[in-house]
Amino acid sequence: MKTLFANATFMAVTGLTSAFKTPDCYMHNCAFARVMPMKQSRPLALKPAPSEMSARDVTVRHLSNMERSNESQMSIREQIQSLSDRIRAVQPTPQENLCTKMVYIIGSGVSPTLTSLSLNILSILSTADVILIDSLSLPESELRLIVPTNCTILNVGKRGDRPSMKQLEIDQLLLTQAKSSRNDIVVRLKGGDPFLFGRSRTEIETLQSNNISYSVIPNLSSAIAGPHFGGIPLTDPLLGANSFAVFSGTTAAGTCVAGSTLEAPLKPRNWDDVHVDTLVFLMIGRLDKLHLLCQALTSNNQRWNTDTPCGVIQNAGSEANQKVWRSTLSEIVKVIQSDLKNDENTVSPAVFVVGRVASLNLLENTA
Image 1 (cartoon, rainbow, N blue to C red):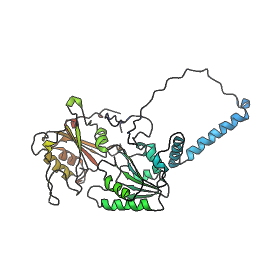
Image 2 (tube, rainbow, N blue to C red):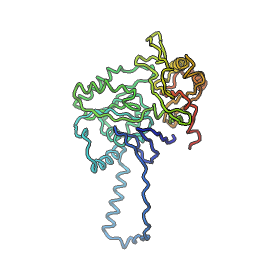
Image 3 (cartoon, rainbow, N blue to C red):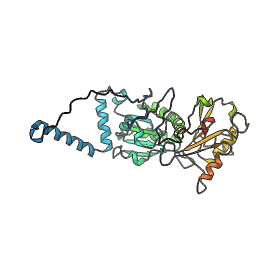
Image 4 (tube, one colour):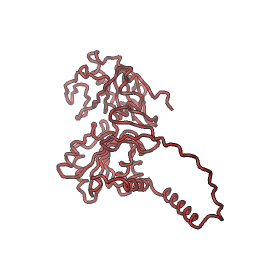
């Protein structure tokens, strides 16, 4: 997948060769490539013949070869822990690391690979006793490469209309695991950012009311990265698009935000009163909900009309599974349905973008 550059006042995604480039603290650290000055050339030093090498030279070379051999035999988890230990040796220890028991509420970002996670997150996962995961784009098989062999992974995620745990049940399960004498490090691993439609509040309040130490590690949300992976910038000065707003496409009751349903009547929102240039919707993968939303947006045919450009990005960030559909509010569902097989009725997980920027494709000719 192409490397993206998101220009915003609070984040920067850079195309470094380093595997660890995701912000992992509230300061939204940004990684920047640094060009080192060229050193002056030195005369070429010829290596001594084996017969001229001292015993010390032979010993040093042997130990160096042994160290490289040992590193190649280390597991990914052991290499992460080793690298983390070296960094901590020269950096002050964060206050939360002084606690013997800790709950980490972590956002996993968007991209479905371990290389998209920061070293801080990988280090925490490599010591976890139990992990409660959402329905992530990151496969559990990849998590198993870095977590301890005795780590328990519990799937508590929600996806579409499939049976899933209630939020209250998740809160209590997290509390039970945090209180268990068997667990020192408990991780709540969420998709995207834990504070953006992540339902983190009740989990944190449960921990707070029981005086349990916790730490929150934010990450990049699909509301930002999803459109960019699809080549759609959320703002563009040439189009006069200077603002955007993010909405959940599904209510807490599981209904569409667009309007009323028989199961749970809702007061429809007047979308003409939303004075931004671009709309972004998460959790809108079901095509019947998407259709209702498009109808609601165009009901007055004013600010948003049937010809307004829009786009849907499915599995954003996945090189093998990402799909992007572009059309107008009146045609987008038909375009998707014509492309699906076996009468599928969902494209979850998906991001829906509405506005003039959706007509752009800034990744069309990139390698």
